[in-house]
Amino acid sequence: MVQVLILIVAAISLFILNIMVYYLFKRILIKGNNPGLRFLGINLLKDVIWLALILFFIDKTKVNFLILSLMFLISSFVIYYFVVIKLNKS
Image 1 (cartoon, rainbow, N blue to C red):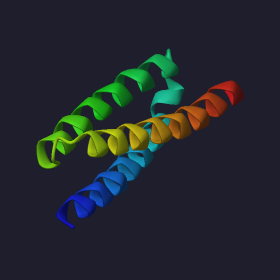
Image 2: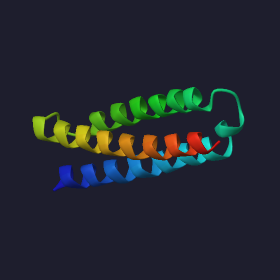
Image 3: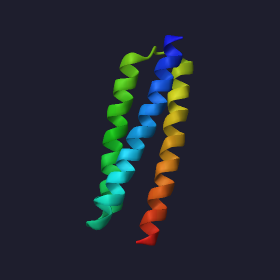
């Protein structure tokens, strides 16, 4: 039960962090030079920190790692999709 709660918290935290990074990109980074590269750098740093913190709290089983990987991949595809659309419009 605790592991399920940790996975739910991980999903919600990843969702909130992605919204924060996209908002930062949309409001600040899009106006400067190389907004795509700046976004990639910030998003990569966010993902590494998030993964390190979540792996610290969760059991290191194959199922949990696969669930985390799936959450990470889905959230990455979604945020990159919106960033590419925004970059193409500017």
